Image (tube, rainbow, N blue to C red; front, side):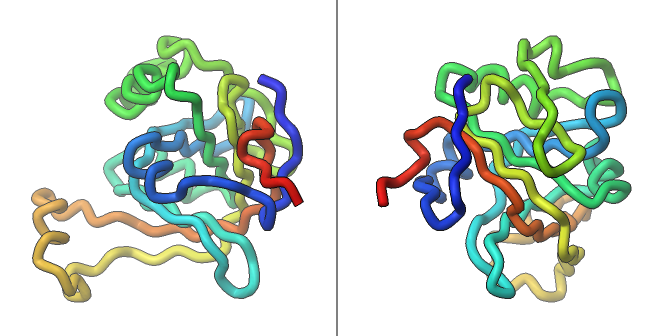
Length: 176
């Protein structure tokens, strides 16, 4: 896919829809040999400490968790709707059991600023440097609908990453 550099302040993205119904693929590790990815539907984008940031959450039971812990960076890739089944496949399979990316038919590509890959089929790739993490604590849940998401008590670790680079199709770029 043809991508252009997108300054963060010119990024156009329907944020809620992107997480809730479109999803992202989170990749962490050292491309090309030692990395993993997973489909993510919970997270956020915004500004923190005067920097553009992405927030992702990963359960410690996920294979990608160890890659997030070992590496200082990650990517988030958004895909056109025609790749929905591939993202569903990646989200339901573990990288411990084989090359789920190849089986899904996606093509990992090197990123420009971080060691984790993006994907050739992605319409948008955000390259992020981890700057903070925090483990969810059930004592701090203020809404009753949160706890039922953790029947196994495998509480997410939240990572905040500074967005270092964004590239994508021109549909994600606002005119100035």
